[in-house]
View 1 (spheres, one colour):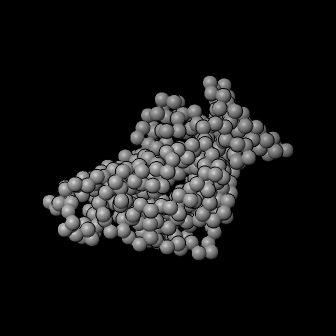
View 2 (cartoon, rainbow, N blue to C red; view 1 turned 135 degrees about the vertical axis):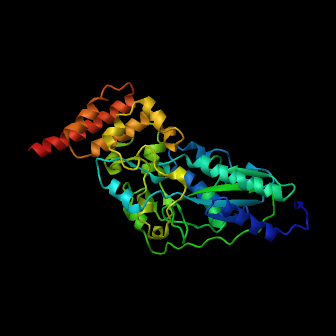
View 3 (tube, rainbow, N blue to C red; view 1 turned 60 degrees about the horizontal axis):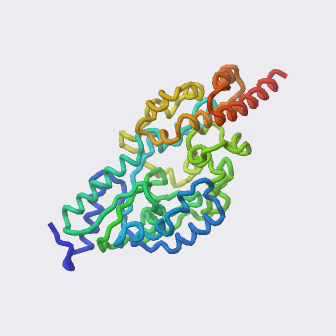
Length: 362
């Protein structure tokens, strides 16, 4: 066991940490320092524009989000990691998206909650480091605290923040999760990744609600992922038609990104689809009782949505589906739902369906 002393070969330890991470099933490991001054300026400007909508947590915790040492005193290095999650070829998810009677669920939520999967591997990596070197503090994060994970990952060389504000890796596209270990070990930082978006703006052009209001700037209030997951109340009518059949999240900007031709399918069993959420009809999902919803989303990131907003989202998608009697009948069964939120979206969907069926009859 090596001591945390001046004679420690920090380059060798840094190299070993990267290899240990790969050995533990992570797909990439990088190291960065804690200087996020530029990212802090960008975050503050974004918050000042109120582009975060109801995500009040983005404005909380003062500067702890952009100053790691304030979140974990003594932190001078961040180990940033990538874990790929794409469970199926993109063509399959695109087929679901193009079928308005099917439910589209963002591919990162098809399987087990990624927080648990990635956190366990990161903790194993932290434990491995602590076995090798005496002293040192470590804290693992997987989207669980005020952490600027994408700027940290870019500084650690894992990829660059694309125009859609997701991280992109030249060799892996963007279908991956990020996690971090904060530590007081003086590890050797990697070179930051360079931007390779060039003149491409495919993600900007494809966005259904035009939420990417400028290159590298997302107005979350317009984003379907925000509308279907973060928003607590009614979905603004102006965005409902554009939601199509997307009931949890949206992957359009990733599906169209040319760098994702290099994305690799995951071999992680926990990320494979459960309960056929990769290819299920809207009507079938709309019939789930609250007990069925809780049972079938156990261990899934979808569960945080709750049954009420689950029905809200599906009601909108059913309103966007082709006019049909089965869809109308499914909506009618929820017309007297105890939740005013559900009733409001069901009534909107019924109005859309009746417009379609009456137009078809004429």
